[in-house]
Length: 338
Image (cartoon, rainbow, N blue to C red):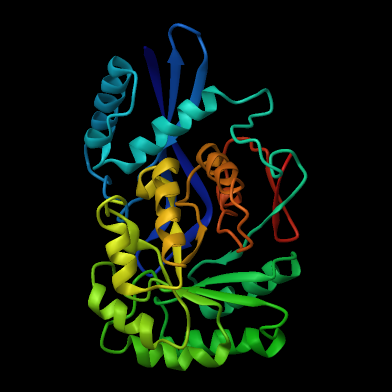
């Protein structure tokens, strides 16, 4: 049996984080502390639905969270069916249980990463802003040692975004710097392929979620005809991994999946997504959903279980002015555990 306590925190962004969908200045998260009544062991996890994106981003979230925590403490195990509509709550309970087993250095997965034998390559992230500021941020990331840069697109005029990418490419070839772009579903189905053909000249690694989620037939057409590899992100949110994941991957045939454990039901369900991807020969990498360092630490350790050479999207902890202490440090485009 378990008991719990809950703490609500408001993380403050150092500068506003803009996408084609939203602008973030603060981020509300809940820290869950679970205690095993028999052993007195405690573990801390994070539940933090992302505004306008998480399926469990609902007005009465805190009361639902309290209810689900009480149910868990009474049952002593995760109720898969009851928690299916609440992926962030499942993630929070799961990470708290894992943290309960952590050693004195916070290790929940024994890997070369947590043993300080290997680092994890990550991409540098450039948020939406005016083109001049985005260019400056991209150059700063490159000068800081990142060789994979992810740029948010879809909010500015498309021609202006092309000029931004061209300006970066004039200085850094694809041999030196890999560029990813993330549209966050901002392209329209009827002109997405035209835009992708325009973007081809910048030798992009991939584009994340060119269309809004749910347009499977359109996305399948784009995936089959696009000159740029397609990575699906929002498309995964709200799908039942056991019933719909393989069907979606088989239909759309993307090159990559983007895994956000907090939004798709936790680490164990993310493992199931990876199994589906591997069966279909689809690559993947993980990104944060703007968790605090508590959730980010769990995700980074989980990713390190896999020998994945692709750059992960986990360098978001430094976005907040009041984040919690972390053993994750970023140097020269790599994350290391200290």
